[in-house]
Image (tube, helix red, strand yellow):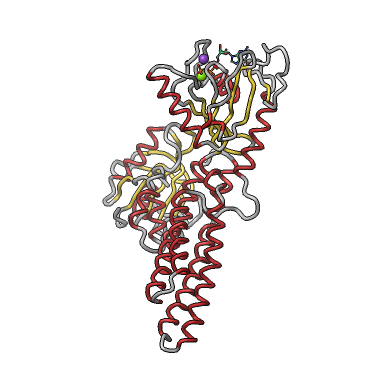
Length: 439
Ligand SMILES: Nc1nc2c(ncn2[C@@H]2O[C@H](COP(=O)(O)OP(=O)(O)OP(=O)(O)O)[C@@H](O)[C@H]2O)c(=O)[nH]1
Ligand SMILES: [K+]
Ligand SMILES: [Mg+2]
């Protein structure tokens, strides 16, 4: 990416809409806007302007023009936003007219955010928060993403960095005074005390899983013998015909997944192939997938047919403490007498109760008690784990002070990568690649 280029992109969704938002960023922005609209409006005030093709003078559209001179813009560069009519031809014409200006090109995905990062407008954790906000499907996800975009992880990371620097300074003092035994020993003991307190805090954060779960969704897997009504249950909960239902045992082979919003909580519900002995090659592969998805789930529903004598779940599923649910009670004689939740996927009986239980379980899994979790994605976990093990090595190291102090620098590098203030090149692509064009 060359920051001398001026970039343009449709920031609102693709396709027909009432209004479309075009964003332009880079040194030629002022010239392009002047060429299109005859001048620059007052900074940060919307002005209604006629937009004409600078080459032919023909009218392209009328729209609102906003001008954000550097450095007070999202990217930190000269920027403009054009609110124009959202027809495909209108937006294409305005974009094409802008592209005729020298040094102007279409933006790559995430390029606006990446320039904001390069210009120190956003740190990496805030960029990730913005990406999550754009992808958020439920209210709880959006709330967490916004908290992160506003700097929740950055606040933690800078506190951790400061404490590491303090420990580092103490460890280095102990090296400098190594010929004065008690001064050196005292400084090293203080450094280890700082490190131990920080390690305890990092370990506490690593124990919380709710941030990542909330970002990814709480995973519920429906498992059970063939024909128990698993696909019928998925369809009933999703209120759409997602999975094929039939009286033939072994209908479902692949995993069928739906994303649900249960009172603001994101849930991923997966229907699986019925589990039984035997089965052909395809069905066996389906059962293998069912078991492995169940093993990764936050909650497994073991669905059985109330009208049919049932096998117990296989031992690998039993070990996951599945939630027992009894289906087809519309056809069963009695309530069954077990602790299973009784439902009919067909008539809808008992579904509300089941949904209440699912909401409770998802709520327990997703809503952190106390402080919101610092970790919201695997990248954060990897860095914090690496920092914690370096701290552990520092605390245990009782040989040369120089070697021990190096572990603190390693920990500092990993914490620094959370916000990207140091040594970030290799992680940039992965983060900005998640964005759509125009952000
Ligand atoms: N009476 C009654 N029939 C049901 C109920 N739920 C499902 N069925 C029927 O049971 C049969 C099997 O339903 P499916 O949803 O395909 O069952 P499955 O567990 O997904 O089956 P496989 O994918 O083959 O493992 C179909 O004929 C459904 O109409 C129910 O609550 N009551
Ligand atoms: K079936
Ligand atoms: Mg099925």
